[in-house]
Image: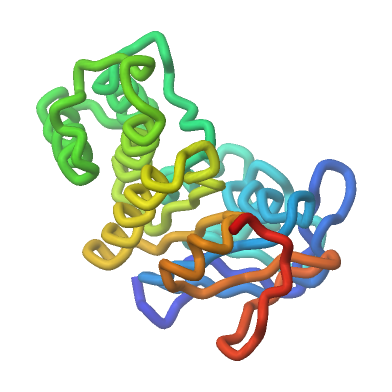
Length: 237
């Protein structure tokens, strides 16, 4: 994709949280290779933006484009194709606890149209190696630590070589040392593969240590933080 063309773009967009509008007039452009934080207090609409990006919530007003799809006109049957271009990482991992790591990843590949057993096995090995979990393929998720489970979740997000990884509080359930390891992994993927990262967090320590663009949600708006601004949010230190 052309580096001058946004992967994600919103113009004058109203973002819904349930039945209510939580953010008005959102303007946002995210380009290939960007690392963008969406930050703010609880309830300011951070996760609602993510839900809109992945077409889980409808855009209330304005325009929105994600990976070539127009969010205002896309059909229900196109949503799975949009989501194949996105890798999504959640705070609570959302692994299937009744099957092995390998089978978790195999489930996603089959669900997204892969057919060849050989190619699926190869791709699973590649993504597990990328996150340092190549020896854990036959483990069950409950046999892994929280940090290891999140690494598997990131491997799952990488399976279809997404244009962007959407990470919703990916370090929220982890201790500081483990969270640091996950951030090094995400920033490495961003740097080495050029995969754009959009990460929701309320942890100031993270976005101050690992540099990226910062979008601040407050007072029913979400705007980009400039270098000389001071973020006056009551965030986790």
